[in-house]
Figure: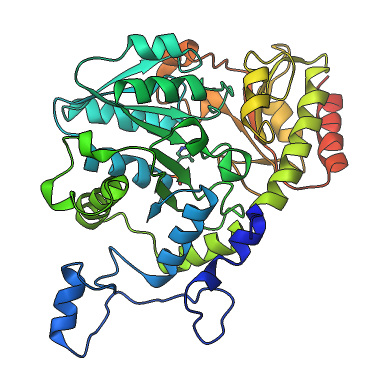
Length: 410
Ligand SMILES: *Cc1c(COP(=O)(O)O)cnc(C)c1O
């Protein structure tokens, strides 16, 4: 089966089916017992396949890991309790004091906060304009180990120079980490631009229903870890394309403990079956709404890669199946942001993204509040900026909702 959705919905059947169950069952267990103690030891030593302890492995979580690996066309995946846990644990497992990494300056707010914490622990970060490969190249130092970028940045939707940064990372032998959350593997597979590791917050589009938190790191098989001196000797075994995942699993997931639970894994796996269907609808809705707002006299600006006016419109068109389902816009300064938002009836005032429901958030006052006005200004975040995560509602209901809110305040 070649199709994206066919592969997802039949993924569980690639392993042994339990009791004919078409969904991978929820294995609500922490421990796994063995009749023969030698078998238990063999599993611990990696000489035999099997399960040791729920913090590291669970059959329901493994089935989801296989699904995500398939979606990203990778070689292995480790799941975590949240997307932040995936990012934090990946860096914790791969970098050491004295190392440096380059990150896109356009980042999910909590990732920005996390990277600053790493600086306090001796792993330095430089933020660079990732829409421009020259800016990323200029930030590289002798002790740089890794480059981290998001595909479409949130909330102003800058599109990173993904292809060019991939070539740069390959030339310099750097690990290239791409956070694919905003595009999801349906719109884009970072392996195609040479990513070494792919991050997905499973909480967002992959789960889709806003009912479970989860995160994943997928190894693409592109990077040759033999040249990466931070891999411990004990993990330098077998296929060198999978060494990072082995170390992230042991030094990261096992030792740090941010495990994904089996119930959440089940919710996410069920959600993942309709990723392509939801994304088609959400992206079509986003195009319609962004187009409507771009022409509205009470709107100063709309940031959506699907619009011709977007600085990376062409790049997004070349890289992504669709330009995403998230955009943001600035209200005319004569419009009171609170009054406008409170008039919306279908659109929900909420901080999540990737939900089936359309969600709106006043960015400067919430998710970017803690970073302060200067960093906000440097990221182009105006006080009137509203981020919209577009859901699967019927298009006309969404257009009508915005129209009545504007009519009430205009
Ligand atoms: C939400 C998000 C994360 C973090 O994911 P959680 O599951 O909420 O921890 C990371 N990166 C991006 C781009 C996100 O949108």
